[in-house]
Image (cartoon, rainbow, N blue to C red; front, side):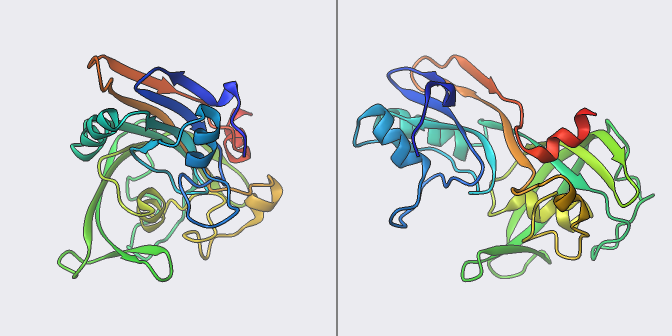
Length: 243
């Protein structure tokens, strides 16, 4: 993988902000597999790139990396203290019935209204999945996000929705797991959309999870200035809502 100028949203002596395409890992130890850290090292011609936060491999979005260890520590602190604000766009299907008992008509599909999801997630490292479990389950971690529906599109097969999401915690596959559990599985998500008719995915050639980290806000690690970056999702699933 080779980064171009169009992939770089901002760069200075302390950090670099870039656009991660879907299907590329943030960082990997697998020989021969492309990842953002290796691509950035080649682009910057340096041996050091500080990883501050990550995105799942299928997910598109904005990432900030540090060029110095001091910048990495300060940016990582913002990420850890939740002062780094992460916004997402997702394209999902509104299911009539879910295992959590939610159904259409329960009030979770009113456009423009914010909803808070709080669940407890348990990660299975061997299978590389997470699932919603009861509070108090050993190893489970609290997960919270806020979402609202900004567009809806009805087809013969499905009610599709475009979501705006603010992540409050950073758990393994959090958005995908929580939304699927709430009856809003993401388009293109074979792992957490089990039981979902795939006619839409085939029809629109959706190959990646319809999730994009489209806006990132944080303080500059050296100056403290508020930094804000935004992109438009490029996945074909999002084009469904442009017509």
